[in-house]
Amino acid sequence: MNIKFEIAQLEKEIAEKKTRLKELKKSKPHVSVNNYEFVKEDGNSVSLLELFGNKEELIVIQNMGKSCSYCTMWADGFNGVYQYLAHKAPFVLASPDSPDVQMAFAEERDWQFPMISTMNNTFKQDLGFVIEGQIYPGVSVFRKTTEDDIYLVASDFFGPGDDYSSPWHFFDLLPSGSKGFNPNAVSGRNK
Image 1: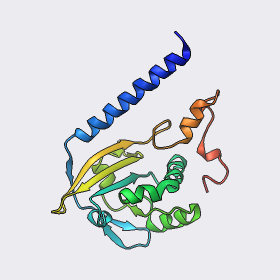
Image 2 (image 1 turned 180 degrees about the vertical axis):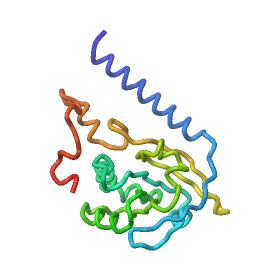
Image 3 (image 1 turned 135 degrees about the vertical axis):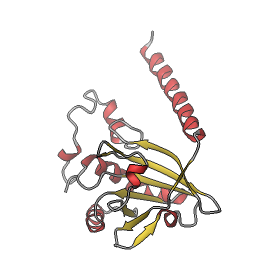
């Protein structure tokens, strides 16, 4: 078989499967969630409902915090597209770090998006991002009703090679792939 043809066929199959996966994720029953209280990087409290602002949808990044260089790389990427995301739906990064650590780290990295601390609630655990005591990164998407009920619509985990961090896709094109890559080794990425 011609390798170009095989690549084209695989890319087509992957695109079709991704489309089907999106459809399945959207068709899952939405799960009612509590109106959690968080602490913003300025130290003030904010509820999950308040994070929606005047929109009906909300994107919350489940970040592991400053100590995770991979989460930092993802957040750096989100910073570059934040305005596009926030135009469609509020976009917030949630980490277990204290608000003062969040604020200092966000300033250091020039992050534009708002951050909330989950250090004093069970938000990450309740949404499945803490497994056997270990926090995992990902994203949760919510919708609210006109009655201010909040529902979890979809969620996904982050990891090397996922669709949420573009460097992995560039690495996949290199002869060496991502072999040997570690965001800690990148100058200025793990301050």
